[in-house]
Length: 613
Image (cartoon, rainbow, N blue to C red):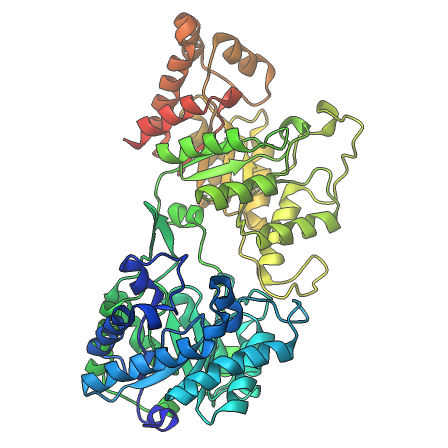
């Protein structure tokens, strides 16, 4: 059988994940999966057999990391040829026993080192390492060579050159992308498609990366760029998450079955599954492909480039999804530490997460006091705990250059929710002499983000390479002294593109409706969700201070009287008042924005649990 001839006749189905299946059989990720071809061939054979029985037309050898660089980490650098030959021979025996026409693809993964100009390994050294592996695969009888899951165009170019220079086999080359539809080095699908095709690959495509939705989007862009190419698509079973020490993937088999047809309709010649997929996923894809009439790929019409609707590079944030689905959302503010240690902050954030908080808001130098960068804290919280954050982004102390650079930095480290505020004046903080200038007011920054960066251009109209995907919040005072001015400011922020609002602390359920009614009487329906500020009281002194000294905060006499009467139990009563208030505002508020005082995360936790019940 010849791969390229078969691709002119029908859409082929490749197998699913090898590593996922090996791990499910108790083999740790610290072990060398490729060595199993020699030490535990029956385990590998069983997986090949399962995929063939599921309906795969192509099985991929268990040689993904069988190159000199990666094998050296296990002291196996001298066994490259033996491991690769064993991988092919093993697959051939299983195919022969199945009495089915199944192609064997010799698997070549990334070298695990950086290639010049972004690393120390010279291109010719990389090509030599690839050649060593590919020659062993070809000599053992592989039907095709596939270089997959590589994110560096320089590296995959050398893999293609090595395959073309040392075998006559068809060569498949597939790249993996990050969540923003770019490679790790920032290359977009159009550039990738052009480079893979020009490098001489017979089949090009995408694998691993994210789930079917993202890879369908990428496939369409690659096909637009190279309409005459043949395409290979193997998505992960969604984005992985760690549950009880295990790596879990959310996309089930039926979901993959649905996407098999969408991939074929979008121009894929080969479909299959990558990380997290199993024989069940492949069987579902087989069923879908067989149930739907086959058609020629050449019949698929390609829209002119200007007619293609651009799709967002990112999925909506969890905050955006919850608010759009009208799920009551709990955000909790935390302040960065004053020093280097993040242990207490992470402990507090973990408590809040376990209690049911949906989003952690990280303030930026609250009260103009020197603290760790909010960017770093958001990054640490998201990476360590997996809970989504909202970055507070004050305009205070930032000129236009700094603002835009900080936005790029935030996006680069995975921050997507941004709360735009003016920021506290430096005159009240640790460094009253510090520069307090700014080039943009909050509504101006919101406009820059929503109408500039999210459209792919900076303030001057220059392209930033790709659009950002920020979900932008703004401040709202529900108890203003001047209602008309607040309504005017609210309307200005909405026109700039604000997605949601966080309010100053409130203590009466009537505060929201008053301002909403005033706005809607003048400007029509207010569509943006409001997260009402909740600042739990902890003592009579605390309540008195907030009521008498903080602008915009009014605490009802009844609430202050209950706190006063509680004496040592004031914090408990403060939590009760907060819970009562939250229950009453659910009619107009989309959620709450809680601001625990004096690091009382335990009190915040009690409130969250109570309102979540």
